[in-house]
Image (cartoon, rainbow, N blue to C red; front, side, top):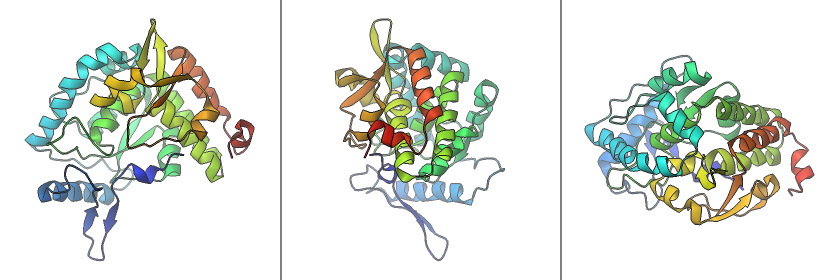
Length: 293
């Protein structure tokens, strides 16, 4: 079962208003006080933001821009080889900078004319019902920090590279954007924790880690694969099963490691139809209908 708290380093605010990001054990930045201060600063900016205002403008350092460039340079040829056509076309349509970190408002400005989506800042974890529910309104909650520069091709938690390079490019495709909106509507429709977690589990194995068959090859459309240098090179070696929403909700998996089981759609159109229909029809009775206990 998906537990969003496993994905993000906790963020706290003390009685003096000081914001602290508690990096997880083994994090590359844990022994770097400068990196920790930077994370605290960026989290504080997100916490100070209020809806309706422009997203905080982060003055990214040359080191941070360098991390963005490095990841873009390494992922670009892998996207050509492994990403589905719709993702590659969306990358061209959104046309994000590859030489620097984009601001969230810049991402929103690119997405708005394409699919109507916009980005808002998140200090770290966002409750399931808020994160998914906001998708119905075309709003994506995104972190603004970058992974540590000592390990630019690895991150133990979602950073802006994942949120923008993975999800942002996907959201530039109108059909994927609509599937996201349907997931958001489902999250708002259901009233039980079991049904909400079912929405999150299916989202995880599709929008985050989905694969599909295209031109006789297995290709990726999931943001978690397409933003991960390591995962994109390994996903074809995993156990590949057909779409199975009941299995997605019951399979044991560790979100901190490569996913050993992936679910493949027959095509991009099949993914849009089947996953979209699942979210469109998901309600409090869906877990029982699928045999999810």
